[in-house]
Image (cartoon, rainbow, N blue to C red):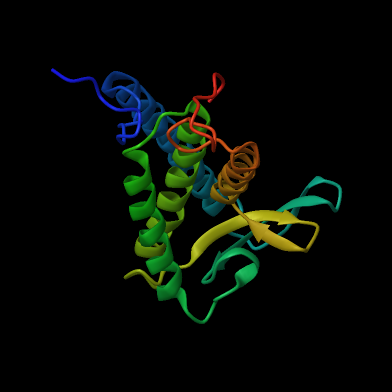
Length: 185
């Protein structure tokens, strides 16, 4: 049998066992993100339903319950259904990208993003007015600048990690831009 030429394309995907383990990590992080988001929202709905603001760290961080029809900073509040479509697209993109998973860091980032997106998407369907247009439960007030939730914290963490991975040139498959595997990926 002739040897493969170095010119021929090669499958650079990690071995199936590693991909399955990394996918398991992605799912575990997604479950933790989702559960932490939903449990804290239930607590907020139970404890903050009186509309009063409660200081946590002076005026910098307080707890105040709102229903957010939009995205971060209430952007798109008049187009709640658009937020639902964006969340579904994010979920599909994560599923598509995860098939090439070869990096622990990417598994963490994508898992955090997946769980957070599912948390806010759940609100879109189960919170009034429902039907994909429900308001997301927000309750962490950042000095009056904006009010968010635990899913938002997971999203920001995932975004920071994704930016760091991109700056380091580490792809979802764990390879650097020039095609060599990174030992820490």
